[in-house]
Image (cartoon, rainbow, N blue to C red; front, side, top):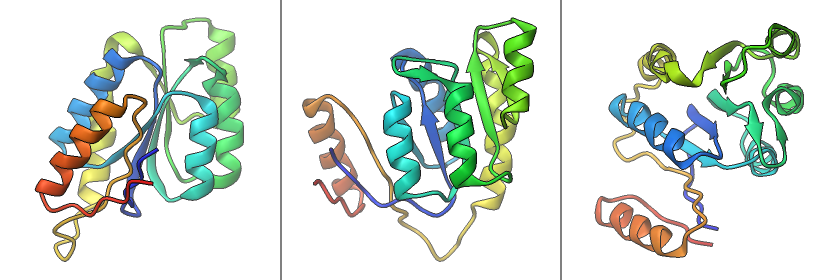
Amino acid sequence: MTSIQTPACSILVIEPSRLARSIIEAYINAQGLYAVYVKDAEQAKEKIKANNAYGLVLCAYQMPDGNGVDLCKVMRQSLGESTPILLLTTVTDKQIIRSAFTNGITEVIQRDRLIEIQSYLEKIANLNVDPNNKKPFILFVEDSQAITMITINYLMQHGFIVDAT
C-alpha cells in the first residue's frame, strides 16, 4: 500500500465501482480538492482510524463487505455529526432511505445524479483554501501495482512528497 499524507480537510470516497470512482474523481479534481479512495468498508474503517479529519465522505450503499448505512454508524463514532456523509445508491426503497437518514447519512444521492455531489465539493473547496500550502499531501490507495508506480512517479515529478510503504 502506498501512503501520502493528506491535508486536514480531505474527502474520503468509499466506492467499489471503478467507473463511479472515475466520475467522482473528475468532480473532485475540477474543484482542486484531494481525496482518499477505497473500495470497501474495511478499508474505510482503517482510513478513518488513521485520520478522522475528513471534510466530506462519499459512500456507496452496496459494497463487497457490507452496506453504507451500517458503515455510517461506525463512521459517525469517529467523525462526529459535523462531517457530511453522502450515500451513493440506486436503491429507491423508502424504508432503506429512511434508515440511512436515521443512522447518520446527511444526503442520499442516486447514482444517475452524481452531478449533485458538485455542490458539496464547492463548499469544501471554499473552506479548503490555504495560500501557505502550495503543495498539499495526498493519500492514494490502489490495488494495481503498475498503476501505483505510474502514479507515484507522476506525483514525485510534480513536487509531491511520496511515502511508498
